[in-house]
Length: 209
Image 1 (cartoon, one colour):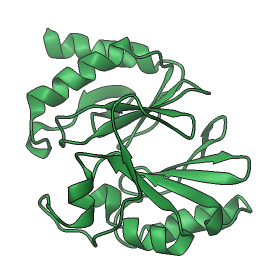
Image 2: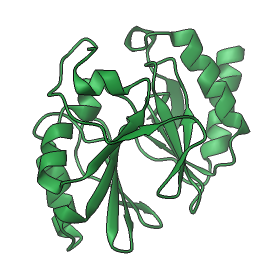
Image 3: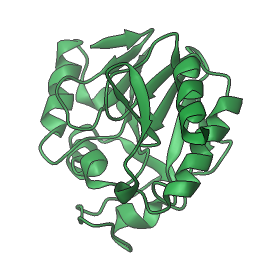
Image 4: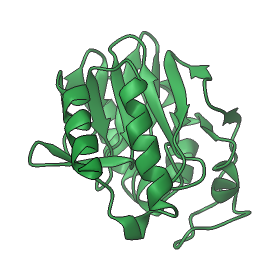
């Protein structure tokens, strides 16, 4: 599904996988559950593009539903993997969350404030130590990973049992109000176009109320 500009949402994955198609390259944001890499490849084919055009897979965080397909997608495309420096050990197999994944080499280490393929990295720890949001400077779309989720047009924080530090995650949500964005693209639920900042402000108000 085309979301906005050159940003696409791969159909029917459990955790959303986004593709940014720019000129002669494709940037993937997350990879999905095991086997879901096939859905990503099918979507790329539907765009009449080729797997080899995927230049980088950027990981919002290393939970199973986001990176279960990471190694297979990397192998199928030859892409580099980028992740926050604090999340890399969970991708390489040095550390694990509740469910293990196939270890993968990470070529690009990210930190807060970095810019990669026109995306500004916003370190947002709480859900995991190296969770990141990504601000697309061209469209003002903000990829928020699992900081928040969309349900019936509203934003909610991810249930506390899924975050290592729910209060730190809540602080990261509040800090997003300082980011200049318009559209909010979550990993769970539907993208919120044009009203992303307003919906986030509503959520913060409910959390502080």
